[in-house]
Image (cartoon, rainbow over all chains, first blue to last red; front, side, top):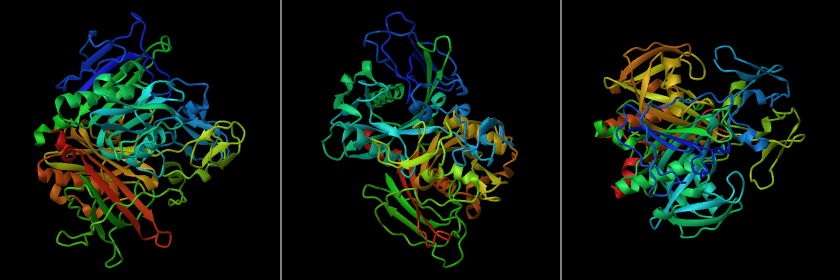
Length: 293
Length: 293
């Protein structure tokens, strides 16, 4: 099934956007929509919402992702390096030091940074963030962030995939670094693309090899949460919010599936300080393939 | 289930390695192994093999991927830009033009290129290659490459994901560019990591919106192949070889699953011109989760 969810939220513009608990009546709402070929709904509960609160639900077609050229920037260089690429920020060739020009190369369609001396092109591509959804005694291991962005908020152990490691190796490494936990990957659980910031989250289901964990330097606390007690009002990133909701829905349905989704952030420059439109299209593998079974 | 396959082959060192039809007795073999928690086998038929040929099959634990520091390089700059990162190739800061030093930053564990002027770090991360496995009338659409690497060999339409697009959008774009075909994505089919060259293949099952296709500039020919006639002896990349084998196995079993795998290329410098060890660990989601069903 293919499902579309739109969430109005805020963004920190780093790894993902940080969805904040909104003030009452400030325009935040949840738009939960289906594409023409969707077959079921996803009961996402916004983390700022009391369980009893109802939300405006609108059926609509999905929104296409937009170019990243106006992606939010930051004064921190780590954002410039880590988040979505902006070709105009590349001023020099990293191989020869020559000045870069910004043109569409022959046979291509996008503006690239091309070295005026050696002619090399500095391609920018999305980055993968890999992490683990760790199940233990029907609880989920979360880490409270001890660093910005989203300092003090809860997340799954996750981070950028490094060259030389597989996605599972990266997820296991990040879990060790952030939660001091040795885990075994059980299966892939979700791929969530965030085109506007040039990131793709790859989340694996995992289990503890030993019932031991402790916060690493990037975490102030690590805790196992029962599903009913997950701190949805203080999660660090939209991707974690979506992942945990998908997991809870799967547990309730009795069938864990692999999920593919797109979180589309569409920025309105006049409202960028407050609002980002987040659209999530979820493809749940299991149901699509009934025709093959 | 988690499955490991090792294939000795050659490499072009670009998008993936190009597996060539070996000369008789030159050391090529297929090592097909299972991890401790594997439950079934994958009947990969090496594309250079006649259907009747048997291969040495060895049970073994999976091999861990290696650091990419000695990844094969190429005289073509496109390889330097596109394939696995080598931090020492970064000589200058692309933001300020300052000289780069190569050190382990505080709080990190890997050598990075750090600007001696502005202090920014040039992170290098794996790239995603996205593509479509297009089913039409129980046939698969393949493109004959009109460009290097692997000129004249067959591949699925696939290419590097761009910032600003989702994996599905990228796969649809690449299919249009390489095969002139408008497709609709049906579901995710496989994620195949190739750590040594810093690439991850994300392949989607797709179907033609219209039964029309024609080769784009990067293809000399596009054809629908019946499963029995797939040109396994002239495929362009190991990832395509693995993907098509997984698909055929799924079709035979009557159940299309999502597959996660790692293709580990382990280079032996003395033999690098001839041999690369390829290990593929396949996690087939469907069977792992029987306990949840």
